[in-house]
Length: 128
Image (tube, rainbow, N blue to C red; front, side, top):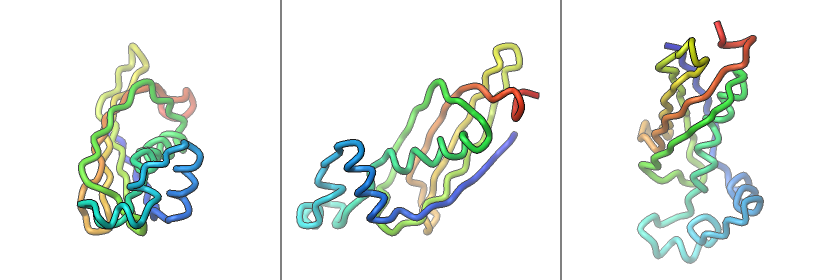
């Protein structure tokens, strides 16, 4: 099985940029006073920011996803460092379709995201 990993830190600036771009004004992401009274206790980043690490890895190898499923299993806080590992599990040569799983963990080794997805590779990178 082919695996690839990438790491990134969840900065306040990136979180604000994604919230603004997606018009995601959820107070859990942008309102410090609101979130202090919640069970999170501090701001969390939008889930799609964590998910986008999977598409980053796919883009580096010329993979186009056709289906993606995400389970957000723990919050990601501003300042966390996330490492995402993608593992391709099935290669269907007849359909030219790959299946994969992904797991993202924070700097403490706590899993924050589980995913599964499928799609097809660029001919020059993974087709063989």
